[in-house]
Length: 337
Image 1 (spheres, rainbow, N blue to C red):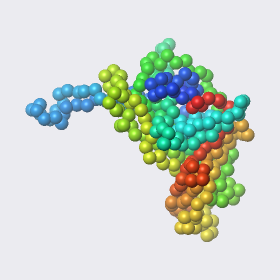
Image 2: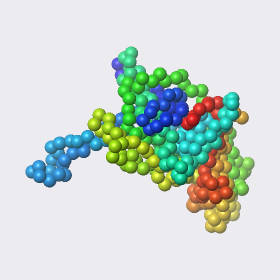
Image 3: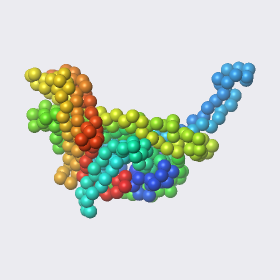
Image 4: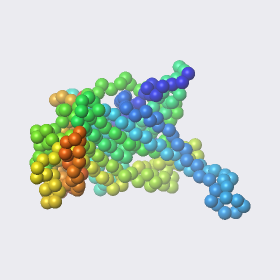
């Protein structure tokens, strides 16, 4: 019998792997919005361009490597945002002896390591009394995430999208018993506060939409080094290192006379940008850019109302020794620990 995509069971490694090739021991189970299923892609080369065959056609193929990658789009819960930021930034400190637990998350220091904590992903789709899909992807890392907020009702006002890549290491069948669904506390944009360079955009009722993002620009080809390992005769990555990382911040607000956003742009004024969103007192996320300048301020329109869209230029703050930080509260301990 055919299986429906809604039957997907998605398990994300809670605790970090001890190495790129050692599967996670504990998992969290989440729901998601996108219907994408991960496919382990064996890549093969061919000899079409080689000289001496007497023609320009393929006569042989050769095993090359595995490519594994996918995305997850979800309504933003305190639990999932904590998970995503912890593995995307990599420097994670958890405090608290009982729920709610506080996570302080910073980008890893490249002077210490270039490798983010690795996690495992398990995908299972039941069918015919068994599973038509039962894969465990070992040694995964987050390439980028985007947190988006917008005006309007419901959970769609606050969403999180994550793109991840894998080493290519795969276990089938997975051998994993994925736990019950994680109880999530979704954070609506109505529970948000936003202050940028001294302007409270919520108190003035001007804010409309925006996003916070982080991209690691992983050095994926460098993971296929001599001796990185083989699976079914195809090469797998033995490491995944960060490249030149890029934080991002963008927002759209109703335009006021005198456009303080344009003045901030032309004067290159800098200040702190802090976006907080919460479900309740025990479940929340705060994104902080300690030093924010504006790169672009463009006039725009939203529902017939004149607005301004600002693209931020996050700067490294030498006092706080970071360009970006995330602080979260949630009821789950041990994420990326």
